Length: 198
Image (cartoon, rainbow, N blue to C red; front, side):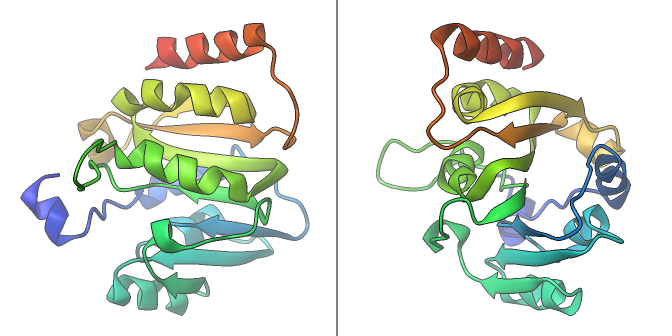
């Protein structure tokens, strides 16, 4: 991560214009629960859910940003999302914009985009929605997990100048039923589709 990013704890929020555009791709039930495990100041999440009746939950590692998110009406836990345990299938919408960095440990360090996805995707109810904002180059690494556990995969290129700099995309996907079996052919088609987009 760049030094500037380290001082912000990897905080590079989704531009408000992009959040408003993404909202247009979603259909919301009358009442539901939504979670942002990397909530930041909560501004993008708030715009994504503007005018919608939802229980809004967030997790944010930085105390000041967690307080900002709370001030916007998001029930925010000030913690490292990787230390949080949430019941499986607890939320209908997971908005995931993880830090774009590597793990820092003794060995086998992985990209945080795939680590956060692996940790949190189980929190989405069957039929619930994932919005996953990542650099396009990281999509291939996440393709197998996305294909195994999600259906109706769509990928959108973000167009604001801050997003173009990092070639950001958003994956929009629906969570499969927990124990549904995916045939090898379906899995391979999904992985190939995502790899072509990457």
